[in-house]
Image (tube, rainbow, N blue to C red; front, side):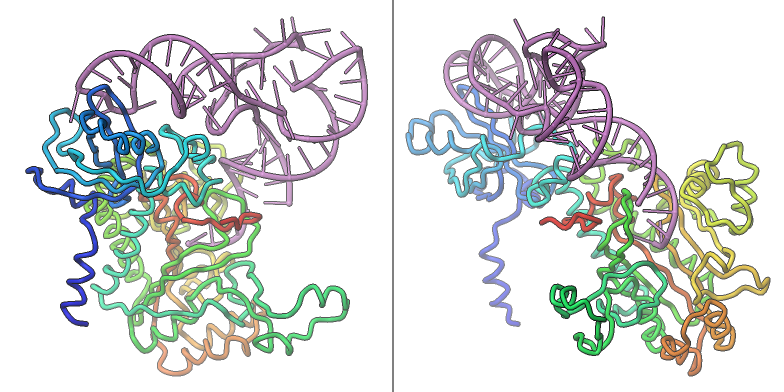
Length: 476
RNA sequence: UCCCCUGUAGCUCAGCUGGCAGAGCAAGUGGCUGUUAACCACUGGGUCCGGUGUUCGAACCACCGCGGGGGAGCCA
């Protein structure tokens, strides 16, 4: 593409409010476009705070009352309320009052889109997250959801940066899968069959007539697919939507969420732990550096102490313990658990939180779980009882990462598939990876929204994705 | 799916033992001040989630339904 193309684009884009607020105010003429957050009137001036989403801060625009002798401007100003979209031209000047470094001394105001106060649902006051959840199409206009959106954007970009800088290739694994046995949870079925007609007929379903000629589903994980690319490109990752049809009603589960799944060839569990640790620390450091204003907001309004705890996470090596040690820790804990911990038990939420909050006081990597409670593809350890699995647990909600070294020995993997009553035919292509040029390899899954919960201090996962999908919730 | 909590003005909530529907914020009007969660005064604003029942009388008690939240399980 030519330079001229970019110049043209560039010329049509006004500086954002973020850019304006970073400028030295010397009376230069500026034009801003955005949405009114609040308007305050005095006899001498009218103050309009405008936000365009480029940053948390609004820009204050001051209309001197002398301008109001213009009746057209006066009536337009009267119709400008919280939520309205406006274009304001004026001079960027140092602010004589406290609260902001610069402000716009207004020359012209144009009301673009009205937001009548008697109907616009957002007021210039704090709203509960529950209320805003019912207004998913408007909530991004609030400080909190604007900040979440910006952090989400930065984290998505940082994920690519991290992997690209470390020699990982981005692989697009399929959204639709015909494999019904990935073992990561209930799946949404995908079909073009006429279900109404089928229900009326009462007959059995002939999947041969379905789109793919067999049952198909939305993916619950890209891992098995990405392992194939791993065995050629060495270091790969996926980052895409993932679907679970579990009837989960919690603050940390979604039916549709975004997952990051790196996979490394010639890598053992210890490499996996190192990658996961560095990855989280990198992302946290980027958030602190590049989303400082938004993080400060979360720290002040959403989760006091957030910034300090993130700073600590970015600098401190993660604690590491084996499952066996973790259970020992839990057994000797001076706490009444609802579920009594014992070797062989699945770690419950309360156990995970105890380990990360009480024992460690930060993120902790737990490894080498009993094979019975983990997936078939995880590498079996020498002891015959455990697998080379790792979960990263963090304070406030527990598991953020789940991963493992994969079983790369054909005979061991085949035996495990048989033991669990799974089908070797279904996994034949997966087993091919062990038949031909197999390597020790490792990877993990990170729930993107869980990362965002962690970084923003938000507590409900439905508030860190634009349009949450959960049981009985698919509005907007 | 299970357990607990909850539903009253646009929002957040109070409403005692069943006895005339309340506050703050928001909105409108006026005033005032380089204001900034602006301030002061006044005004308007209700299907008390819906249904059924108990009662002289129900926002309040009982039952059914619907919505919202939190916790658990499944997991990322």
